[in-house]
Amino acid sequence: MPNNNELTIAALQLPTLGMQATKLDFYLRNAHSRGVRLVLLGEYVLNHFFKEIEEIPIKMVKEQSDKHIELLQKFALQYNMVFVAPILIIEKDKYIKTIIKITEKSTSYYEQQILIPYKHWNEKKFFDNKIKPLSSPMTFNIDGFKIMAMGGFELHFDPFWSYVTEKKIDLVLLPTASTFGSHNRWREIIKTKAFLHSCYILRANRLGEYTDKDIQWKFYGDSMLVDPAGEIYMMLEDKESMLIETIQKSVIKEQKKSWRFEQELKIRNKLQ
Image: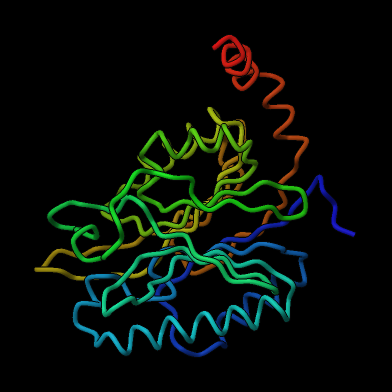
């Protein structure tokens, strides 16, 4: 029987995976032996970085996505795990940036709602994701824990965090592909969001390098678990690795009881 007060989770810190299952199976066997129920992968791990994809035939990108979905479906069944990972899907020869959730029984997708729009990093232009009114990110339950997955860039927008409060989320999953020495900014934002929303945040950041017009993009890792007190509970550095930790409902409840953010909002909402 699952323990509804604890959940063991993992973040895989990797560069883009090849088509072979060997590396994934190595980490997942270890994770399974330690009771992991949920595994998060970073952005552009199941697919190449979007700037590299510009030079790859769309058929090959589809084969890469299909192969990794098939592998994760097999591992979900074999190890009784839930996998959450960004992945590209193709619709009418257009790329859609999504987050996939794979369990032993089902596969579902969340289409990222806000994409990076900058001149040097323009996912908004490259992908064909729809622009429409915002809705809740992907939410689901595992062993009594309420979980939400959002795109890394979506972290910066308050409406997504309103859903965290509204849905009483215990754990936010944050797959990222952060670079350009942005370590400190990401750490501080994640710590602040975890504290203000009394939740755990698990971040999985990509590894690897990309050179664009003599500028080197270094994806630096820093995958981490931040607790509801806003403290970094565990953090990987800049090497390929896997983070495994157990989160606890009691820690969340104690944080909410101590700071009363949610209670004070609830009082005022009743007066409206």
